[in-house]
Length: 302
Image (tube, rainbow, N blue to C red; front, side, top):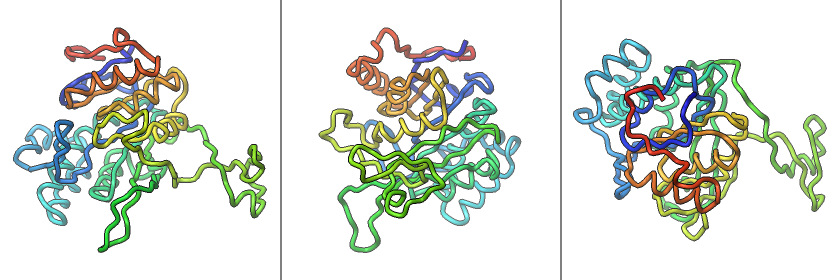
């Protein structure tokens, strides 16, 4: 049986390669965005062809997915070698993510404007354009507006399935329009105040960004709110399913999965990921440190 409640600290490529074929129900992850900056001790988001495009990865990509390799070469011409290196580094991992997903599984990959267009094409190459399901806009309100362009106040979450037989549980949200204009072709339910109605959820999500004074905040520089990943997990998995996050950071995907009764696997290069994750789960009374395994041996399949 596939392991669960297990965290691997280190490069996630050997971790992904140790996972059995078609064993994961859902991947929900937030990789580096190619922002050309360092995030303290947590991770480096800078890329170079010499350091991050290994010869064996290039050979594997050329053999397994020529369209992905074509994109990597094109990115060097349109952008620069750093973008090309980033796509090589991420692309070899996307191939493994597709392999480990079940036939009814899905991937939600979190990205922003820095690399969104290129990552979308990489996912088209790996998963196939027909398996693209949604470009979800996560809209939030924070400070830091610019005088030179419109304020950048959203991220993108790209939702792909492994096949057409994917699991999806429609979600609902409060809708003012359904109340005001009386749409009748969606399921409605009046709320306690009798002002809004419930309607089928759309692909723009207004979820507040995490603030440093909130109880769930850990200080991790790119931590996302639990509400965001709880929504993803509810939509594309069921209780008891396996959720994977190969870039787990402060553990938001894992905490959301544990809250919702899912099993999970996680990995991160940051050596503080296990301690932060264990602390978060213990603080919520979800799992003690003895119940969370820190993987060290990947010599056999997970």
